[in-house]
Length: 370
Image (cartoon, rainbow, N blue to C red; front, side):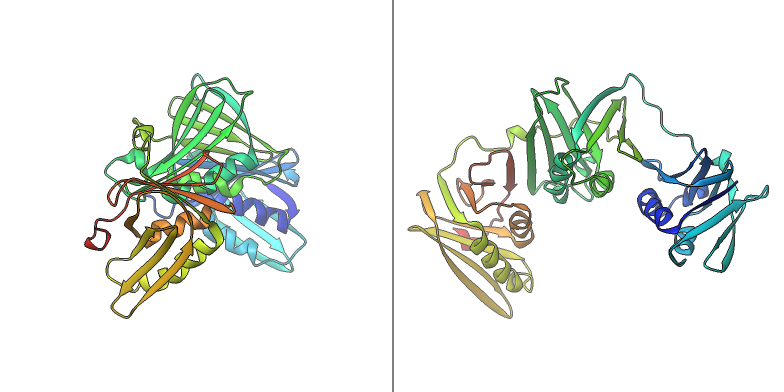
């Protein structure tokens, strides 16, 4: 194998493919990048067996071939080369030689035949979604995916397509984030649970270009995503997702509308003290068209007061500071609507006039909210 390509283009390709490199694996071959030189391109593949990323880089291929090179080391070697073209070749003993900027580096590689084949999908169904829409849905929900949970389905994100709607849902037992979008031209009905790590990697690879589309193919327990130069294969989480619609309260005793920016700043200031305490609590006190935000710890306390639009009963309620901070970080609106029933029931927060982006946050039981 021998090819020449732009160092910058190869760095960009490696940045994409190596997102799938495993941090630890008993299968040593997966610590490498599969490099395949053919026609006028080089194909880079990395996999941790749950997610596989394949991307293509333009190249002048003098001799076709394929081999596996240690991923982290190869990435660092290429990054340390100056801009311009680099030349890479591999001999019959799978030794890679990298030349560029007056430098030559030899790296021992492995036979590509040892690398796992790409996943194959059975009875696949395909849909096409705007990349910017899918990226927005991921950014606004992935933070609520459970990092660890006895219920494996909660360590993934539910992608549901039904009735001309695409819905993405994540929940970790304490809060839920839901984002919905209309796709009236897609008539398929199905759902899939995408592993949490894969969700984040997919989001990073999607474009903000409203004209760019992602092709999603579902087959068995696998998902195949095709972008312009990159393909992503994902092993889906198996099992039945939580019936999230049953968690959302149908009616509320108290409704509050508040300007988001003052609320965000108040939460941010109160969080400084809340994080110094043992309980990480913020307390909202709603009464007479005003909201007080309070936090207390061993080293101090904070009191913030905001004007609000209030309908219904007065209420004191406490939340984990992290969950409220996440809510105000990801909502993009002038005003938000906070819907409550009592100090121990789920709270629903949405942008005003936008029921397609929903946060559910469970309150914390405390004597201060009585």
